[in-house]
Image 1 (cartoon, rainbow, N blue to C red):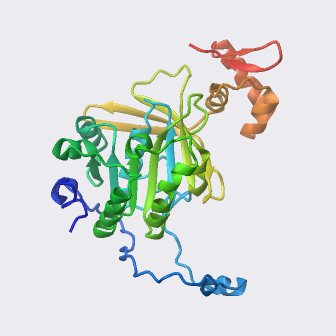
Image 2: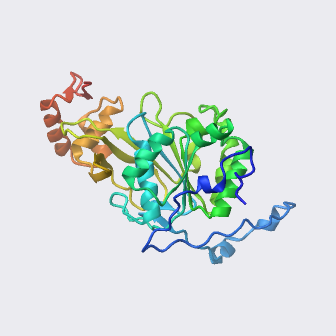
Length: 350
């Protein structure tokens, strides 16, 4: 029985799982097992192992969910300033995971069962985005439905609701859990207090032990340079994707932004920075991407409030100084960057 069904008169199972579809022509991952009965912890020495024993232990290989940076049972963050497109990107990623479509240049495994918890958009906005993205294979839980039906709100800092989500993931064998977003769904957690994150971290680690991958959507700090709040949240994350505004002379309609990896624990090589465009064409969202150009990367660096020298930019981007110099000349010509008397380059504001 669904953990939500008899808890605080929350919506029943049929309402929560409406529209769940198993994609065609994809190979679903192995079926998840129920959590085994736990032993009583009486002695730590029971768990001692020699290096040789650990070396010889057979450990199941983690499945690659997307490219070689997103693996089974991992924690990832997607963050951005308000209104850039982090929910669009998160919904697109989960749709690709469910349907086996490529996410930008990255191949997705497909056949994954995704539970997407929306704490901010509301049902009307969510419906519009699902229709545009054709996101029928993802299971959505819209907190607006729960509030209107019961007057109660899911608080994922509360052990009761954490246990409900664990029960749902076990019963329905969800592979991926998306929490959109941290500010709306973790009430009572001070974002700047590292110790407050202890209300959440054990739950995330338990989900990991079950093989459930978690994606948390969050906001940037005021300066736009990093995630808002304590950096302790990042310790357990395998990957962190940052969205940045695009400021150039290319006119586009819809959500346009750049993505870059702040953290990448799995892939041997840092995944490329990408420029994304989400453009509505009739009843379909046309998602386009390309690898970021040098000028995009320079503007992103300067957009973070940094005044930089050519040598600093070249070292950060790993490219030659003359390539940076040529791009800065074009950006000065286009009145997007100015050269200061100190020899530093600064981004001009609109």
